[in-house]
Image (cartoon, rainbow, N blue to C red; front, top):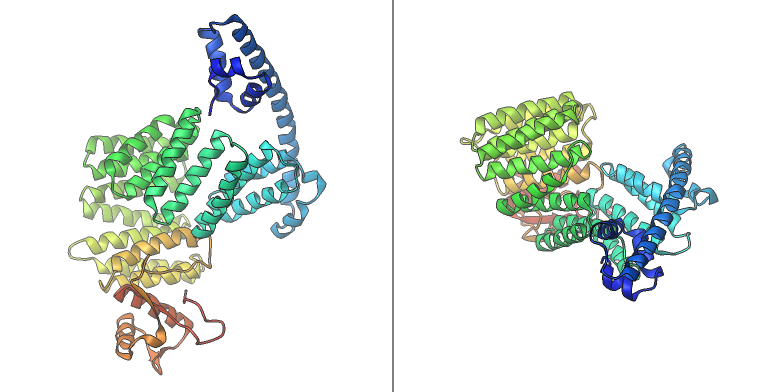
Length: 499
């Protein structure tokens, strides 16, 4: 909460508003404007305010000089740390030269820079936590601790460890009761938790958290944090097919962003706007969005962003009912992603293409076979990770049968790839929530045979002949019937759900 300038300055000693002003640039700016433009009615109050503001400015300047020196030192130390293998960095962080809040903050900043690689982001955020636990407690240490925990949770979520991420954020919430965090950190906590709740399909809670993040950011003048929260809100509403509300959030986000300094965020905002306007049939607005995306090529000149722009255009055309053109454009994007050495994105494009192909009339199952052949070459060359290939190949083969919940299967595979590219141990399930879970031994023999025949599997003595065959059987049976199969008691190491 910000200072009520007149009441606070009249009632508090200099020390308390000074402490607030040191940590709140918004209130410093507000008080400075108040003194310059309107003044305060009480001359003594005005003089007190000027004294506090001068002291705050002086201390902030000294702190910034110290921070600059600490940043230079931290950068040099970080370069030395990177010379060590990751596993040795954990032990090295215990050395005294690394024990400073400045170096902990540098690790946090590096984790933020690496957020697209959740393994590295988790590593650097975790290193900062190890360091912070050894430093004397205080407000700044607790704030850094909260930021690091948010990054750990974000990394866990990106790797598909959603429930673990929720536990991490519950621990972060405990810090809120110990020390009031800065507006930026509180907004970060809310947006991070919202993403976790969205992945847990608790959409109402996610939207409430994003509303809270927006309120905190707006009341504290944290415009970039507000833009990020509005962007997350817009995409979540779009996923829920609430186009009107998504449009409000995404428009506000786009208005807050400077394309020159935040081109990636702007790209995401105009992507969301393009799909929203296409969904609403607003062609002129859609053309403006696509034009804005083209202009962003000045700041994002690599071919991958050109391909993503064409992908967005294909998605918009599909929403507008121009199926043939959309399929043709996305097929070219798929080929371009392979040429650019982006196998994960190529697999995701293939799954989206398969959805469109099967929704066409008549269903274009041949296209799925062609996509399967193209991705099979990537898998054979080890360019597509084997755990992802196993899911994608099963999905594209089974979906051609047009049996069971094949559309849900494709969507589940898409969601799986987004997380599994960072986590080879992530379990895949065709359905988010099965109707029931049964042991293999409880399946009637006739049902076993029917599923095996549909999936093209051979049973040996009534049993899938290998772990891979058991996995494919479980996926096929769940897609066909809604029932998840467990293989228990086959081997001491196989008392788990097949994945």
